[in-house]
Image 1 (cartoon, rainbow, N blue to C red):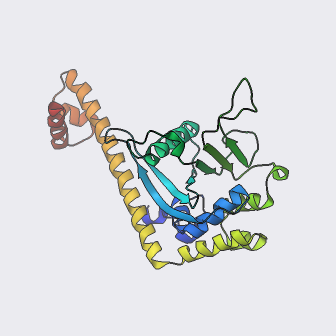
Image 2: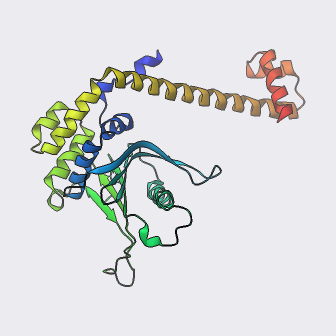
Length: 278
């Protein structure tokens, strides 16, 4: 099959697809509309809006690449993530994102931690990570002995589920937005009574119709495709080397190994040299 047949057209992407999500949220006014829907109030105009922001505390430490990182006029920080694939480590991943965000906000040598910005880690998922049927799960640190005692550390993590079932507990606009995220169509935008969602859809249409974005999408897809191909080939090569190593340990010759593995003797000899260099 030709690799290009596997490419999902840009016009068919939903906001659950990271490429479209990041391109749309690159506009700070649109990201502001999304945050206003989530929080149910107007968010102060964003001063900073970055997509694919990389945070790393040292060359040796693992970095993270945040989908949309922004700061409003009150210096509150928002990291908004689209997570299409279910992963078992999402809760702990949000913890790591929170820690790296905090580190990036404090300049070296500042002794007063009260200057640390309020921050929100927001993860949008097309699945229910916690299985309670909620559209929104909001986490803050509370005292086990006194649940009404909240640790006012300014850190909040929010998980949004497009497939919630508690419409009576959240705003109708949030429900409509989360449905639209998973079904990003003209029909879904027309059916909503939310002007914010219609503004978001105007941006989606602009992105989808942009020739420049279309080229960027194709390039990003091809890069990812070739990265996967290289990883697949490297995996196959390592597997073959392991098979060769086992047969060498049994005293097999190059030609015997080649016949057994149905590979060329020249390739086997090359891989043997690589094994000797390891």
